[in-house]
Length: 186
Image (cartoon, rainbow, N blue to C red; front, side, top):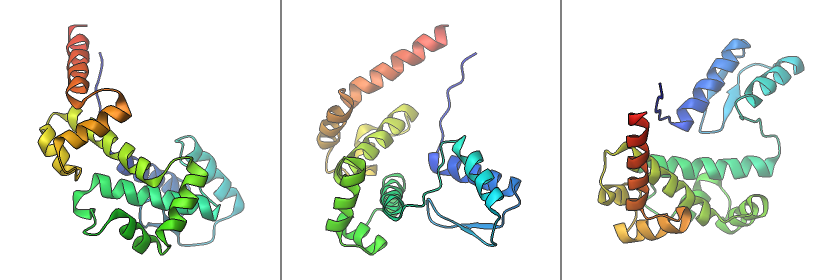
């Protein structure tokens, strides 16, 4: 038997964090994406045990300030891409500057220095990943998906989709449909 599944990475990550912190009896408060406030001091052994248990799920505690900033940039972008209500009324560059209290030029330099890609490219990749999930879910048309992801047109979404995946959204949908048919006949 094959099962298809879908998940929200942010919810999955938060649930894993909560489970691991509660397992170690650590008092905490979940803050923004990628941040937890530990209420009490914890022993070095508990901290190492927490780090080890989170590493099993590819969740890493970040202690480098620039790495923390990069993670905050990524989290803010993911939040915008996955929650249309959070999409800023201003430009994304202004939104990131305001949210993170740094000049956008500094944010772009740090981001590209450590990730070897631009913030703009990261945004495009996240939007295309979201578009792929929406196509797979089959609840929205391409027009609705382009609107949901704040594209000016379906043609622009299709152009970026093809640049990132090598397929048009329609071709991607056909591939998914064929895979579904094949898995249903097995």
